[in-house]
Amino acid sequence: MYQITFYDKEQTHLKANKKGITILETALSNHYPLYHLCGGNAKCTTCRVFVSDGLSALGDRNEREQLLADRKGWPKEIRLACQTEVFGDISVRRIIRDNKDLKTVTSESKSSKTGEECFAVILFLDIKGFTAFTEANLPYDVVFVLNRFFHEMSEPILNNGGEIDKFIGDGILAYFQIPNRDMLKGSTKEELEGLKRETMMTAVRACLRMFDQLKKFNIEMKDRFNFTFDIRLGLHAGNVIYGDIGHAEFKSQTVLGDVVNVASRLEALNKKTNTRFLISDAIYNQIRSFVSIDKKVITKLRGKSETMSAYSVIGFKVHDSILSIQKYFDQMNLDSPHWIQNLEKEWKTLSQERGIPIDNEKETTEEEVSLLSLLEKIFDTLGNPKSLQQGIDRLAIWLSNHSIQRDKISQLPPLFLTVCKDSNETLWNENIQTDLKEMWAEITIPLLER
Ligand code: FES
Image (tube, rainbow, N blue to C red; front, side, top):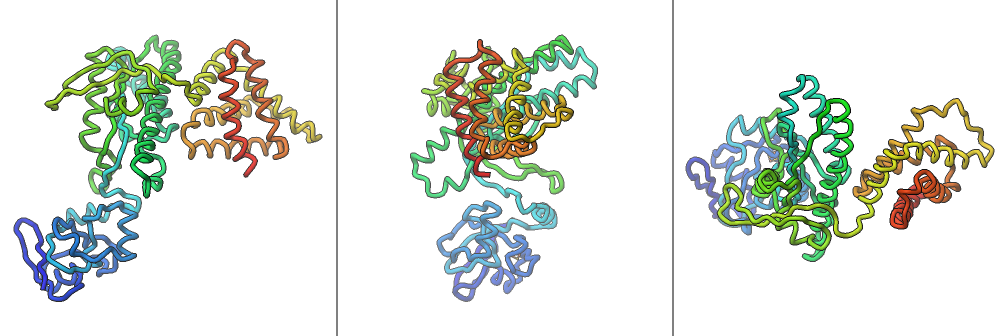
C-alpha cells in the first residue's frame, strides 16, 4: 500500500492499493477530483500533475506519454496521471484545478511550449531620439517610420536565425537559440560550449548588421524627414524560461528570467556610459578573441547587489567573411547599382549560347529587381543555413526560368566575380575575392544537387 499526497490548499493523502496502479485510478477510486477529459487515453493532457516528491517511485513514461512529453517539451516532473504507474510514496500537485485552468490548457496548440528552460542569447534594442521625432511629426508619419524602423532592425535578427519575442514601445526584445536542438542530445560538454559560443557570435553579427541597416535607414530618413536616429543594444546569455504566456485567447511565446532582465539593463546602461552596444561579461569571456571593444564598464545593475562588467563592442577583431560580403554589397548597391544589370546580361548570355532565344521584351526593370532581391536575400542569410537554402531554391527557379541549365551552373561564379570586379574596381580586393569564391562554393553544390 502506497500513499499519494496531493498538495492543494491543503494536503490530501490517498491510498494506492496495488503495485503499478496509475495516479488517475487512485484519484478516482478515492473520489478525488482530477480532470480527465479524454477518459485516460493520453490525448487531452488535462490529468497532468507536477511530481514534487518521489519521482523514482514512478514507472517510466510509456510510448504515448513520451510522445506528448516530447511534443510539449515537458520536464521529467510533469506526468500524465492516467499513464503513470505508482510503485512507492509520492507527492504531486494538480496542474488543472478549476475551469479557468482548464480553459488555459485546452487553448494550447499542438506546437505550444508549456514552459521549458533553455540556453538563449537575449537582445534588447532601443531607438534613441524617437520621442523628439514623435513630438515634431504627424501621428501617421510616426507610425509609418516606427514600422519601417522595426522592419529594418528585425531583418538582421531573422536573417541570422534569431526570433523576435516582442516589440515593446519603440524597442525590440529578441533571442537566439542553438539552431539545431537535436544537436544538443548526446553532445559533450565541450561541444555544447562550442555551440553556445557560435550562437553568441551569430547574435553579435546580427547586432553589428543592425548598425549597417541603421546607416541605410538614416539616409532615407534624412532625405524624407530631415531626421536621423541611433540605437542602443544590450546582449546577455544564459538559461531562460521559454513558453506560451498570456490570456487563453491571446498567447505568445516569450522568454523570461534574470538573463532577460540583465540584457534589458545593459541596453539602458548605454545611456549612462555613452556607448551603443554593451555585451555582458558572460558573453565577452566566451568570445573575447573575436570581438573588438572600446570600453569596459564596471557597473552595479539596478536590483543587483554584485557588480558586473560590461563591454562596448565596436566590431569583429577577426575577419568575418559573412559580414564582409554583406557590407561589400551594401556599398556596391550605393556606388555602382548597375552591377546587377551587368550580371543579368552576362548570365543570360549563357542560355543564348545554347541557341535558346531570349525575349528582350521581357527584360523589364521588375525582372532586374527580382534578381537583385533574391541575391540580396542570399547575402543576408549567409549566417542562417535554413533561410539560405530557401534563397538558393529561389535562385534555381530564376535560372531555370531563364533557360540556364545545370551544365552552365559552374560558369556562374566566375562570371559573377568578373562582373563585381569590373563594376567597381575600387571596392575590389583579394579578401572580397576569396570571400565571394567561398560563398559560391557553398551555393553551387546545392544548386547542382537540386
Ligand atoms: S486523461 Fe486525458 S491525458 Fe490523461
